[in-house]
Each structure stands twice: as C-alpha cells, then as structure tokens.
Length: 432
Image (cartoon, rainbow, N blue to C red; front, top):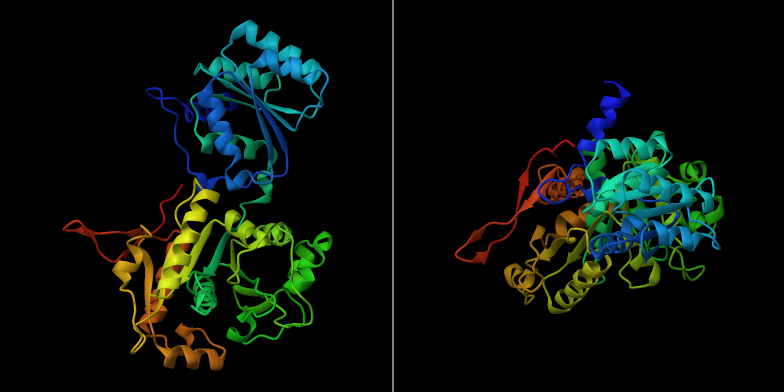
C-alpha cells in the first residue's frame, strides 16, 4: 500500500457518520506520559470532550488546560507565554485562512511543540495539507475521548516500546475477607494456565502474605523499590523479583514491623510504570486501608477486584468502594465483585442475591467456605489448583482470571424481572 493510500485509509477510519464520532475502545489506549497540554476550543461540545478526557485515569500524568477561543486566541495567548508540549486547536477555518492562522501560531510556538487541529470538515485534502506543514494530527469534530487519547498517545509514545502491561488491583471490602488469597490464586492461574508473564506485587508491606502463600523467602522486595524511587528501573526490578514459577514473579513485601510504612500519594507510581513495561500482567495485592496512595493505585488500575463476605459491614464498605471508584474512574467498567467464605456454619448471612442488589453489580464468583482446602494449601505454600486440581474453587479462580484478562465476559440473565446470579460466558477475546 502506498503512503498516500495508507493516509487515505487511516483518515477514513476516523470518518464521521451521521454527525456522530467513530467510537473507540478506551481499553486499548496507552497511558499518556507526563506532558503539558493546552486546548483552545470554539464549541462547548469539544471543550467538554477535552475536559472529560483530561479527567480520565489514562491522562493522570498529563497537565491539561482548556481555554475558550480558537486559533486567534491561541496566537494571542502564546505571545507572552511559553508553549506546552501539545497545543490542541479547534478551528472552523479551512484553506488559506486556516494555513495563515497556523503560520501565525508557528511564530509564537517553540520548535518542539506538537499541534493537533480539530476541524469540522471531513476532508482528506485538509488532513494531508496540515500534516505536510508540520501539524501532528487532524481530527474531525465531534470526536470521542478514545480518538483524542489515541492521537495524543501516537504522538508521544514510541511504538517500539511495545504495549504496556495491564494492572489488576485486588482489595478487600473488609480485613480478613480473603482478598490476598484470591489475588495470589488468580495471579498463579493466569501465569500457569495462559503462560502469560505475571508480576505479583504485594503492597501490604507490614503484613503481606504473598511470600508465605507462594513459599518464597526473598532477601529483597518491594521495600527496596519504594524507598529508592529514583533508582527504580527494569534492571533494579529484575533484581528484586523472586521467581515463583516459569511465568510468575513476585515483588514481595518485607512483612516486618521494623519501621512504619507511611507513603505519599505517588509513592508506588514509578514501580507500577516500570513493572508495566516488563510484564503483560501486573497484579497488585492492596491492603485493606484507605490512604492517598491506595486510592491512587485503584484510580490507575485497568481492572479492580473487590472481595467481600456476606455480612453487613462488608456490604456497606463494598458499596462505598464501588461508589467512590465510579467517581474516580467515570469512563471505566465497574469493579469485579467476588463473594468469598459463603456458607459459614451457624453464621447468619445476607444472601448473595440480597447482598448484590443495592450494589447494582453481579458477582464474578461465589466461593464457598471451605477451611480444609484453604488451610491445606496455605500450610503447604500452594495454590488451590496445586493442592486439589479437581476443586470447584480452583475453577472459580480460573473464571476470575478469564474475566480480568478479557478472555470471558460477565453475562447477567434476567428472569421474571429479578436478576439471577451471574454466569461467566466463556469465549476468546475478540481481536482488535
């Protein structure tokens, strides 16, 4: 395919049909790096789209300012002010007027400033002319958040870096509900069943159990990484990882009380970023606490799994978590819910159906209370599927692994107007 035909094809992929933008898949958008962005908008709908994009977790590292006015406003604004890494211009101009205005903009912009133009004409000739004159991309309004973030990612991310690994965070609605056990078993399942490289990171530095559950005693781990953020790179990460299996590596917690573990909001960001570049799957075992850094990790994760047991405090906490995550992650799917320790003898319980009703969420798995198999696996430093390969509980972990990796979808069946318990519809992930 010639370059010109490829340009035509790429542009038509962003075509606007019947006044609606081509919708994109936010899950395929790479995290935008630390850049500064200033946008100058002529219409409210484009301004709102950019503001919504700026609030998405994938743009968390970018600093975005949205201003009113188009090309002329940008020229006036930048005459006395430094230009950002990226300038976004919405303009209804075309032809000579547009090119003249962009020429004036070039006179007040730094040489390394990138420019995206958002226009209102789906014209391949405009696209070609703008790109030929140094504009990084031309998008047609109205546009989707995925389109805008994809365009920004394409400009600032080296395609040779390869895709970033997906981050999956596990947290309990209450202490002692078994979130860590579920997290470790899912990590092991993904690595053993699908042969995907997995980095399991135990972020409970004081009381983490991943090293015990996986029968590991590494001399170093996550403490060395979090207390040396400036030294954190793929070489240091490789040295700190404990190899648990062919495709499973552990970044272990010290699990000691020699010091207190108080961290800033961004303390774990660099660790996660480096791990994402090293492995297609990064699984984070979070302690049951609500701090600036746990909230930050949850807000940045691609998938979140909440574990709860069927009692009142868990219901309250699970609802608070789900509601807060909806605020932090407005463009992401709801977290996955795992009901654990269901059916404890003589313990009054809320039925699973009644538990999930106020949450407006269906459980990804319902795991029964079975102290024998969990106790045997824990004492032997094994996963459930290792201790008992035929266990139904092991199959539940496989269902969760398929769900968080996108190899299955959660299907909710309705009957008589009442939501039944969830089922997992297995199937291969659709190719992009």
